[in-house]
Image 1 (cartoon, rainbow, N blue to C red):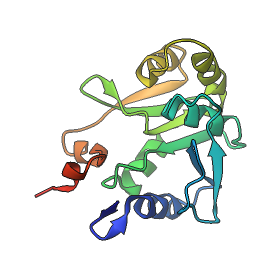
Image 2: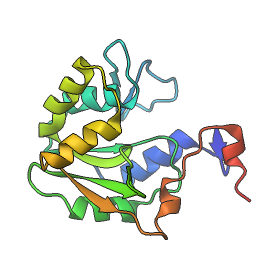
Image 3: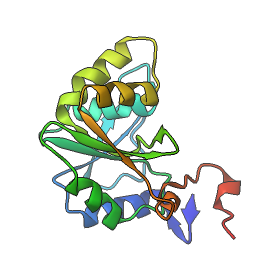
Length: 167
């Protein structure tokens, strides 16, 4: 769906390209027809467990120390904010934004060593990213970052047609 005349996927890919990342992945159950050639498709291993599956599959393919996960439905996110997250990275530890005690797992940076934890979560019965993130924080693989009141708009999701009415 277009937002302000631009497809959501185009907004997010433009944002990621501007960060000059080593590689851009698109994950999902099926390879989307809009996927540009400079983005590698990574299919979810069946049965798909939503974002948990996508992040797990991409983590198994990354060669860098960290993976930036960004949902397609957050067009208000900025390069400035994502760069600030990157500045908080430590070896073996990623960052996850937090709003009112809820984590924002689709605008987070995961360490490659979290792949084992994602695989374990997929093999279990709790597919909640919130639960997994709590475990990663306890294991010191993720550092939670409190989102300021001014930054909350960056995380606004556009999923339904009525979400696009932002008067």
